[in-house]
Amino acid sequence: MDRLVIKGGKRLKGEVEISGAKNAALPAIAAALLASGEHMVARVPDLRDIKTMGRLLENMGAEFHYKPHKAVITTNKINNLEAPYELVKEMRASVLVLGPMLARFGKAKVSLPGGCAIGARPINLHLMGLEKMGAKIELESGYVIASAKRLKGADIHFDTVTVTGTENLMMAASLAKGTTILRNAAREPEVADLASALTAMGARINGAGKSTIEIEGADELRPLTHKVIPDRIEAGTFMAIAGITGGDITIRGCVPEHVKAFLIKLKAAGLRINEGADWVRVIGPGSLKAVNIKTAPYPGFPTDMQAQFMALMSIAKGTSIITETIFENRFMHVAELRRMGANISFKGNVATVRGAKGLKGANVMATDLRASASLVVAALRAEGETTIHRVYHLDRGYEKIEEKLTRLGADVRRKKR
Image (cartoon, rainbow, N blue to C red; front, side):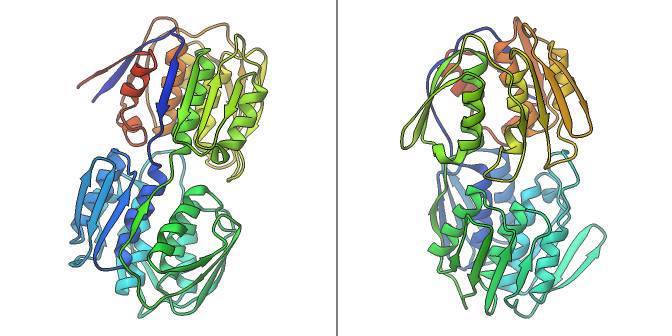
């Protein structure tokens, strides 16, 4: 397996261009299943997860072509309505094909999802919503088997906020008969971006980005042409890197409003922030201040930035309390940060981070996507050399990160297996 070798201690400076959001590109690609024809999704990052989604659609009979930052999907000859375990196990977002397949073809067979091991993340709310829309749902040998002559609009209330559940039902409702209302819906920018993509296909959606979304179903949709939003988590990761290295990094091609909760905490930690319409300049302080965070659904502090912020706080002056409310198993990076000299303890979903004077390079292992990013953040500050193993996790969500870091002055090398 590939690994990254990082020599820390350098102050990073310069500009970095943010890639398209993986978590916006994946549902947009899945939405191509809703209509026959040639679809084009632009600003698509070159990532493992994108290729996995492409293979999944090809397995169904679609044509999938990836060009630099653009995916072209042709869906005229869908002939297999199954998403097999072999592909779905690699990526939880594969479940996003369930709603579109069921809405357009009246049936679907989808393996229960896999992905990062950061908690159970069940899809019961997806299935509950589809059942309310008239689908018959069966679970058999690890597969969801769904059928419906035509889905019907329904009033659906999510017990807890679910991003992929909101997206799956929003896509399904776009071809349902009548009006569907999603209550306690996810408000993430990626959900609003999918609504924009569906609207371009002819769907009628109101309220995306708010907690109540109303979708009036159409009889058919047209092929998709869409450009996804920038990746707010990649942007936030480079902001944390600026902070921990005492650097001066301008993040280009981002949406500052999408990272507002993170920027507030960075300012509290002593970082200097300047913003423009599509850029943020972050200057790290000589000494970081300890700050408490509590993750929450958007517009709260993102769970996908918790690990990177913990790495930042590992050298802050004072004690930080980090509370994780979204996933029950998202402190797996703690043990690896400790190997680098971080003073972190946790009980349940609350971690206590006592700022250390410094970090030291070590051999560490990535356990999931954002945990791997936190190890990169810490390694860039650590004294000596850090080797991060199992970086295939990192490759699921960060496009050519070592190249971007090198341009900022980091000493980063990728070693092949």
